[in-house]
Length: 283
Length: 287
Image 1 (cartoon, one colour):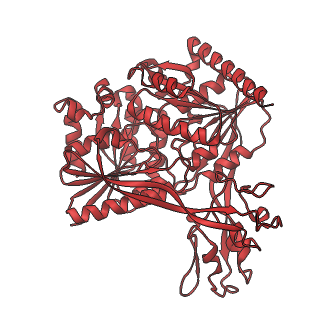
Image 2 (tube, rainbow over the protein chains, first blue to last red):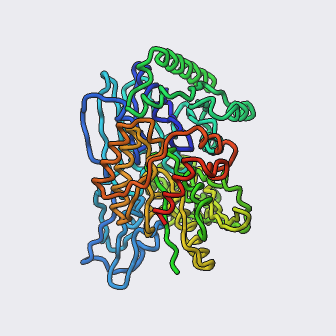
Image 3 (tube, rainbow over the protein chains, first blue to last red):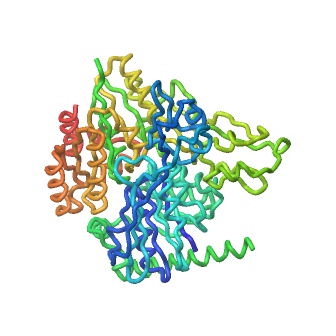
């Protein structure tokens, strides 16, 4: 099964759920797709296996051949290449790597050259892989590196994807192709509002989903009421607790406590059953 | 007079950016505020604004293939790097990056383009019509939140100029990517809200580096500092190393969340509470 953990609002507990779920799920891989602020590695410590830089391809203009006809600027929808008075200028941070400028250049003056925008690390946590993507400081575009993370060959039976917050392109890149999305929220007006946005994203992609309420008890039954109204099951409620906050602040997994180990094992089994159910239903 | 632009950011989500920004809007005078977390805008939940004007946000293009003109030559599929064109020649709008390569390559002009409506943004009034909030709604799953952030900021600058406002208070998005860059470039100060967790510290160091990258001075607030005093010490050291002034340490108090649940800031519910007084002092240091 491929499970993505998402939220809309930041700081609701995506990484808390993802890392602990990974810990108790045998034969699983953890992928940290929050490449702007990857935090899974703070909770999962293991042996470093390999690290490679990640690049996108950007245009490079050979000014000797370029006749500044402006075709490249005409086809570029991102203003990443413009035809100035003297010569053609490239703005790499705006480039989406579509290759149109190179393809349509009538004098073949444009070639593509790699630009490093981040890195991908693989670590073994008790013999289970953790894959982390990290976007370099100052780089604007997370989706290419997220897509690369998800395209890597993975041999484990289960994959747990820790998604970035929000509702736009990085989240879509992270949750696309998942068998199920777990939406982590908290019972506050912000939590509820952003949960509803996240639900709309998941619905748009047509992926089954469930809700996890973190810091439950904080603000009444607003999430329970929402879940009933939308007919989306609450799979787990984690109480608002100082013990959890303390463990989290120290970078420790809560499944080190027997009580939570059991709770997460149950969650893992429950999700696996659900995913099997969806798959049988489809076939 | 040029308004001073202050952006509240955090790197990590959920550290208290919006709550603290909303508090500042209850303390400050003569300002415009802008919610630049356009992916998941929340400030309106606390400010109860009344929308006065609405603008549409167009970004990118939508492409469609018209089957009556399509000769199934496969050129569009070949040029598309995003696997957005299916074998029966339909465009998957979620996979599509709107690069237009297919549109330009199609030999029979079977592909058409139209402007894509990606969201909307508003000018609203709050605080009994005394203040203005510029906020936005990026439609679900749309790209280019950075561009919408820039639009919101542009509108805020214009309004600040027209109304002779002294400050533009900007609630920023989490992360370090395109919307964050758009929310901080050209501002006068980045106020970073962090929390004493390992994640908070890790993300603080990255967002400090981003601020430095764009040459924006930064100052730090430690929220819920008493959750982990050892980590709070560590953050104080990081502030010193980075020459970022520590504006204040706010303790964890359920009253802040309780007020939030009522849809209010602690400044309104408990104006003389220790935290309210602290936030007033912090605003004095910022302005």
